[in-house]
Image (cartoon, rainbow, N blue to C red):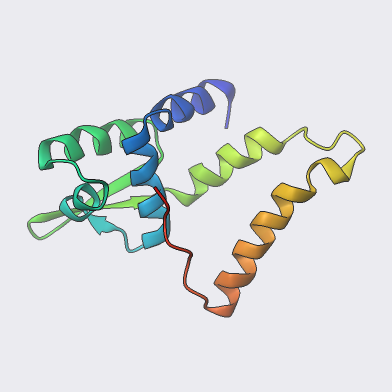
Length: 124
């Protein structure tokens, strides 16, 4: 991920509804959710959900696919991982303790996923 892509991603995430939508889609996993369900979860109308989801898709943070009459949205985990990697790329500079909290948080997440523990609920 380059700086321009990171700026686009952060710009998309800088709005509360869109940040909530990404978190909900991360929690939903690769299967994703219908647009209406995402909108309901964050309390926006169908047109509002479409607007925000389109913005997130243009930024490359989510993707959509058509299933029958529904549009299903899912997080683009590779892009989200690239964003985290962009932020942490030069973090330690010889001081691994600086990165320990971030690595610990990711390790706990991965351990839960490996153990089949459901993801923690998304907080508002």
